[in-house]
Image (cartoon, rainbow, N blue to C red):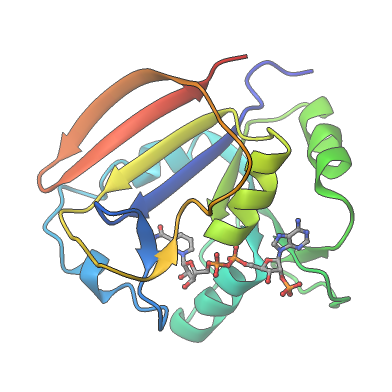
Length: 176
Ligand SMILES: NC(=O)c1ccc[n+]([C@@H]2O[C@H](COP(=O)([O-])OP(=O)(O)OC[C@H]3O[C@@H](n4cnc5c(N)ncnc54)[C@H](OP(=O)(O)O)[C@@H]3O)[C@@H](O)[C@H]2O)c1
């Protein structure tokens, strides 16, 4: 397998671990004063494949004029049968085989965009190699959780921290 073909979570979270409000708003995130693009384009250059859950895809389709990941191979996980579009392929097969197949092909890193529910499936199967979490200085109290309660424990090692003005980026690697 290509050693660099890690599956990487790159996501923004509130300080109390939510990725959106209950009604799927990200306004709390967009109003935080960061710095430049908060490391996004630097990270984006390291990936060639983008994975997301269907709810995240729906959010993008509702809020963005143009699909943001046109120049990458994009897979959307769903348990429904949905016809592929020019920008996204819909995947309803078992995730472990799918991801291992991707990792066995030569390429750059694989970005798991989220949301929490897809991430939970990946964590349960131990499929995430790196976690880059950009923490906003916001406590939401309730919302859509980044991590869902479950019967798992992941031991990570800290690779680095950076701050982008009001944001703090935490970069962890899974211990093998
Ligand atoms: N803060 C951030 O940086 C950030 C990043 C990403 C997303 N978000 C936000 O997160 C919210 C969505 O997160 P979410 O946790 O509710 O949903 P999600 O993980 O984006 O999507 C959940 C859906 O993905 C599919 N899915 C999940 N696990 C699967 C598996 N093992 N196999 C096949 N399909 C699977 C199912 O689709 P079906 O129901 O179609 O079967 C499930 O309902 C959105 O509001 C989005 O804006 C925030």
